[in-house]
Length: 122
Image (tube, rainbow, N blue to C red; front, side):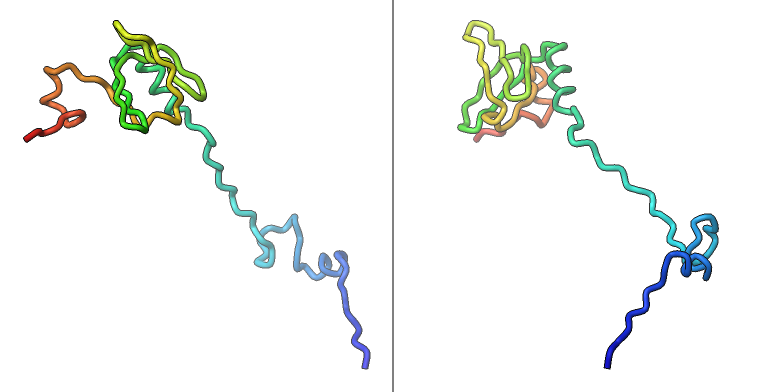
């Protein structure tokens, strides 16, 4: 017993009305889904933050991955490192992968009103 495969041509399908690109009201046609936008790979938030701190010459505290704390103002930055300007001490070129976190160095008068950088010692 031999089976014969039946294949329809595009002309046969088109004449039966199963798919007509010009007639989009047919229920057999598939409407294309709107494509979701891919989020940007880089938001530039880090660049914006560094630029803002550089322009204001904000004193910063940089905590390194080994626990060392350095203070200064950010003089410039690039993709891999930042340059920290320190008064009375040598300037530092710090690789970003060595930074655990950083925050603004608040004056002692503002330290009590903010929860950032405050600690309770016994």
